[in-house]
Structure formats: structure tokens, C-alpha cells
Length: 145
Image 1: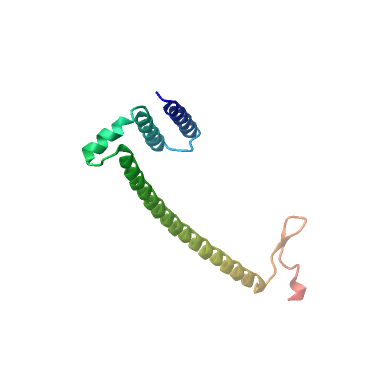
Image 2 (image 1 turned 90 degrees about the vertical axis):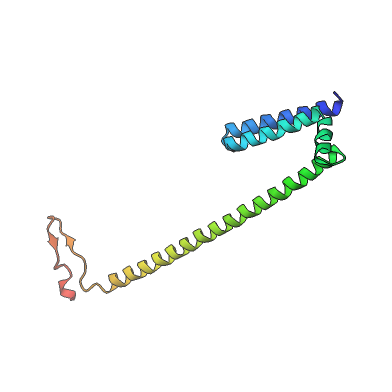
């Protein structure tokens, strides 16, 4: 094994440990955990056996293994970009719906408060107050009416 292979295997091992930590802290789902670990294990195999890419590239009709990796990387990056953009648009749409509902609810609440204020100010008679004896005294303000 060459020194670069040893360094890359060490980096991949650190990445896999970080992925495990994220899974244990519930930052990623079990599905994401397995996808990332599988990806990095495949990368590790390709680092250990670099001629494997050449074999696959020849089988597919590409002249060099490095070209195959570049082509696959570009395809994966474009797919990832598309997926992220679709999710971003969905999130924006969901946020817009939530904000609209909140605005309508706030407007309804404001309207209801104004109606309640109008009802209170139009009340023809003051509220009933209890006296010290516990009996209701409705005539407390009867002189003012």
C-alpha cells in the first residue's frame, strides 16, 4: 500500500466514525446512516483496489477508470442538486402556506377582539358586583342610569 492509500483509508475511517456519532445523536436517520457508510466503504474499496475502476470503465466502454469516477461524480452531483432544489421549493411552498394561515388567524383574532370591544362598550347595563355578604348587587349603579 502506498502512503496516499494509508492516509485516505485513515480519513475514510474518521468520516465513518463521525457518521456513527451523528446517527447516535439522532442527527441522521438509519437510512441515511447506511447510505453514507455504504458510500464510504465503496470509496475505501476503490482506494485499496484502484485497478477496479479501470476494469469497470473498460466494461462500460470508457478508456480510463478516473474518467469513469469523474462521470459518475458529475451525474451524482447533478442529481443531488436537482433533489435539493425540489425539496427547497417544497419547503418554500409549505412555509408560504403556514404564513398565510397564521396571517389569516391573526386577522381573525384581531377582528374578534374588535367585535368584543364593541360589545363591551355597547353594554347597556354595568356588570353585577357581589357585596360583602355574598349577595349580588345589581342596583349598585342604578342611580346613573
